Image (cartoon, rainbow, N blue to C red; front, side):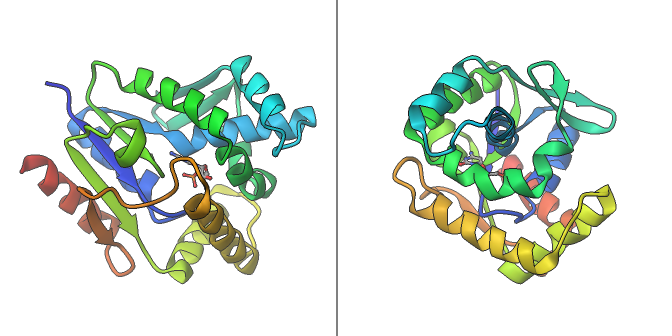
Length: 219
Ligand code: C5P
């Protein structure tokens, strides 16, 4: 039997950090769906495509190849054959990704690609609508939350460690803006699935969060 674990929640709540560890421990594949929206956003920005032009963006997506490759350094994101793992974390992408992600046609195509990636294998998938739309039949659904100050601080520290330019106040404002757009969009908004377990990670360590999720898997 192939188990699916869905991990959703607002921006920078620690989803990818714990999802990666859980996937490794269970020997499942890890799929970071936010990276797919980010890769498309990077391409739109580079090609001068207006993020609010739904027809132009969906046409762009249909001719775009996005690969998530796992290696010893973690997950690499390959956009049309080029490694964009670092670039998709930069501020211009973060500032624009939620406008691209609210487009219904884009979400439909991403949902198709994401289900394909999860087919016939154990998977840990993180995003905003995994438990509600992409994998509604997932055996384990987790909704991770944390205070916005804690989320901004964690992401800031992570950026600094990775050498990504970072400004704490700007980061906090951007996280709040993204949450607002993601929560209020029409298609597949950010919301906890009825059957998801909510974990507030504000004062939990990574190890504690991973442990809680593994306990849910064993139930
Ligand atoms: O997970 P991450 O913060 O990298 O996601 C970036 C953005 O991609 C989110 O703010 C959201 O707008 C969009 N997204 C989404 N649905 C997902 C994953 C990400 O709309 N399943």
